[in-house]
Amino acid sequence: MRWLPPDPHGLMAVSSAPEPQSQRLSRLPSVQALLIQFAALGLAGLAWALLVRSGIPLAPLGAAFLQGALAAMLSRWRGQAAWWHLMHFLFLPAALAVLALQLPPGLFLATFLAMLALYWSTFRTQVPFYASGSAAWDAVATELPQRPLRIIDIGSGLGGLALDIAARRPDCQVEGIELAPLPWLVSRLRRHAGANCRFLRGDYQALDFADYDVVFAYLSPAAMPQLWAKAGAQMRPGTLLLSHEFAVPGAAPQIRRPTRPGGPLLYGWTM
Image (cartoon, rainbow, N blue to C red):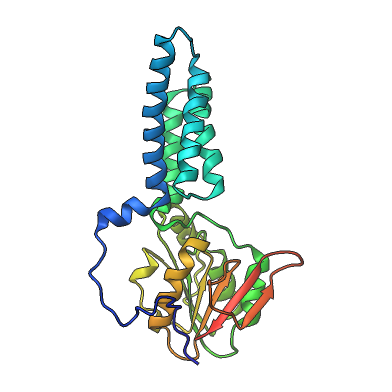
């Protein structure tokens, strides 16, 4: 049975011009958060100037919390997720607290480079680094058909699942693809000499899912509609899409396997 991605507006047959890149960027939560911080900083600066002219002193930490409160209100007004509100409120006070520690500047650069190598384009993909764990690997192995398969783990991280499945199933060809350079490098270094496992660095959107019998994903809720659309357009009938923890809105899975008691589920759809 071939599943198609949900189309609540009935517009799949209507072609439209590609959305300009500037509009796509402006809709990213991370870009919106940056704009909100700048807007709140401007409003807080204006409020601080008015208070000073009125003879009401405001300490730097108080001004930082004022900026944070304004940023949290703007975040709520823009409809961002609830956890963004707290981040906005605490961002500038936390930055001032860290500056007060007078840490070496090189430490900030090293931290930034390490985070960049680990998370890379998370601001764009909205897919942070997740480690699936051995319980998820066991669940995936249980659901794999007993025949030679070509399997891809998209967002393969440190390579744990791909290496585990390749060791369990020497009859299968297992691949992992990872965008962030540090996890990809670690997975390459961990790869055994076996010829049935390899790791690619890049965006899974560049892949053709028609080349695979099983596609496994551990992404994020924000990425699931796009993944489902790609799977519905490219995966062959009878192939299997698996997702750890995150379901596809509006698409009932045929597989709902707990990875451990009280833990996240493994979802699966036969295409």
